[in-house]
View 1: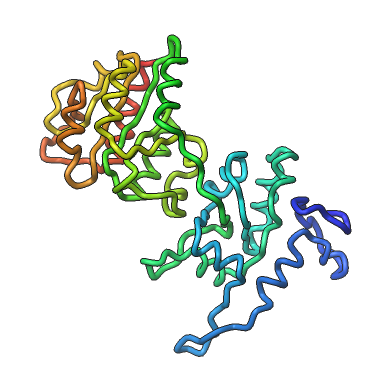
View 2: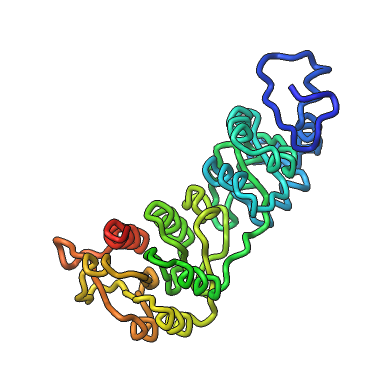
Length: 315
């Protein structure tokens, strides 16, 4: 139990039933009453009232909202992530308590108190505007500010300071599906990729869908957005990065690329693959060997295979 005058971020789980006077001292007791104090608006055809979201939840729905245990836990653990508001359902109190237990005191002191929403309110807040169904939020959500990405010059510095370490970069040419980007981030974290470079246009921004697909990797894998990918590739070659584009017509083996010092794997969009200038900037064109030549792989699956094949021999 927190003290009677809890600090803003002094989250503590109630471990046993408490008298109502003590229950008001929970760090989110006031927030709970706010979340449910508004009148219900409208009604469905069955007569059931639809919940009206509190202002903070409406702001989260219109801004950058992350949801799901892995995305939320990683955002809490990332000191570079600014959290504006936090939301839970009553059933998720234990999950949040577990997350807080693993945070340093300095991080906890900067966090806002969580606001309790009903399941229907959480469903409404996390539902995607272009989808009728709610998201799988697991009773946890955050309204956050976008992360500051790196600049391409930061990648040059990384290469210059690598010494004998083999740098591994993943370069995405107009990959647009946020779920694919999320899955790629997850693989990049698993296989030790140093950074991801993507285009500023024709690439998704940070969204809850992307963050949930990334399972926390959005907070840990550095990324760079560039306006001119062809120019960025030329600059990487000047910094002794070997560029290998994945294409079905490729002739260079991934095994050979695994012995390369600094390597940038280049993947094209889900439909048309790499653009002409992107492909021309590559030093090698490689393909993933498959039993059936007519088969094609999802870009996130291809990225995972290529990262594994070129990373496992580089350490």
